[in-house]
Amino acid sequence: MMRRRQVLAGTAGVVAAQVAGPGLAQTKPVLDAGLPAGVGTSATLEALPGKKPLIKLSYRPPNYETPMGVFKDVITPNDSFFVRWHLADIPEVDGAKWALNVDGKTPLSLSLAQLKSDFTPAEIVAVCQCSGNRRGLSDPHVPGVEWGYGAMGNARWKGARLKDILAKAGVPDGTIEVQVDGADKGLLDKTPDFVKSIPLSKALDENTLIAYEMNGAQLPHFNGFPARLIVPGWTGTYWMKALTSIKPLTKPDDNFWMKAAYRVPAKLFPSVERFTSQETAANTPITEILVNSIITSHANGEKVKAGPLTVKGIAWDGGFGIRDVEVSTDGGKSWSTATLGADLGRFSFREWSFPVTARAGKLSILARASNGAGQTQVAKALFNPAGYHHNVFHHVTVDVA
Ligand SMILES: Nc1nc2c(c(=O)[nH]1)N[C@H]1C(S)=C(S)[C@@H](COP(=O)(O)O)O[C@H]1N2
Ligand SMILES: [Mo]
Image (cartoon, rainbow, N blue to C red; front, top):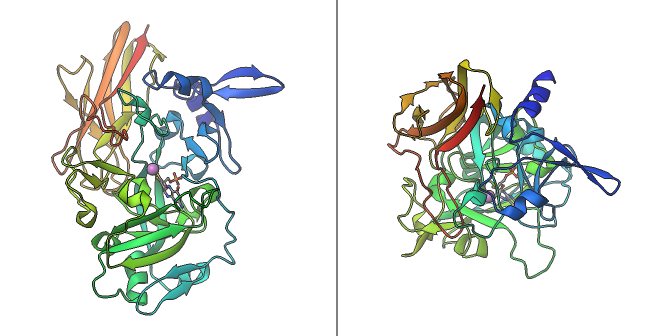
């Protein structure tokens, strides 16, 4: 408790000012200066049922971002985990009545109890990061939810392996993709239902789970109760929440959310994992998370005393493993290697720390991570129309007195 209060008091990303409204006190988050001006005036810190206050970017559908201070912990608590939905009709699922329908040679309908008892449980710590995390920092700005740094979270997921479920249902010959759907719907009939597919190879990967536990508890409603797809290494768009159906497909899925959304220009990003059945000459579905890191110990404008201090942060990638994190305190002229913390697995946030001797004045801190695939964060964002894959070096400037 004390810890959290200190976090709230000490980090500019979550410093809360009370803004008096008509009979209502609203809490304003302090946001990154790079966000569009309108975000700063409209975003509030607000708690959804069962959640701690998160940065509200839209209410219907709910899009709520995790404040920076939460990332001081390498595991993101369920009640602070970000919330991202595309459609406004999100039913409260009754776990006792819920069924997961699986198409195949012998179609299955699994209850929550069967999902838990009929398949060997597997556990994995993995980052769920929205493709559009930090979209709000795109220069020039692009349309979409104007996320800052917090459209991501790291949790320990427990569930059944998708490959075991598919084996039980029997994968038809010629299957190339596996399609997933959730309980949410649009408010208008013409709104395309949020449906996604993944390549069969990814569906059969032993790390791909149907999770019914998140950090040892049932999934919060807003994070996909009673079960969601976990696609470690890949961006959040594939992590279907409140899952209702799984369908092997013998043709590429051509629904709106595959054909038109969540695509990046061909060859722009250094992704390793491809989704070949969905590629066109112009673009490709977004796949794995690019290597990235943030500084969590200090926030922009924070005041510190001169002398020794430890800069800390987290680094993560699409599962190739963090090779190193480097820190620069001279604006990127020279870089020194940080010490990596405990390894919770290649899909998890990895803590890092770096000692600095702060002298009076402004202390500029830059961090950049590299991964096992030989990729490094970028100094300047690779512009793309949807603002995906923002992995520019994180820069924090503190005031030393
Ligand atoms: N049913 C459903 N699942 C969904 C979505 C959605 O709109 N509906 N959004 C996806 C996207 S784009 C992201 S980034 C993650 C966000 O997961 P979270 O809300 O648990 O943080 O959920 C994914 N799963
Ligand atoms: Mo997303």
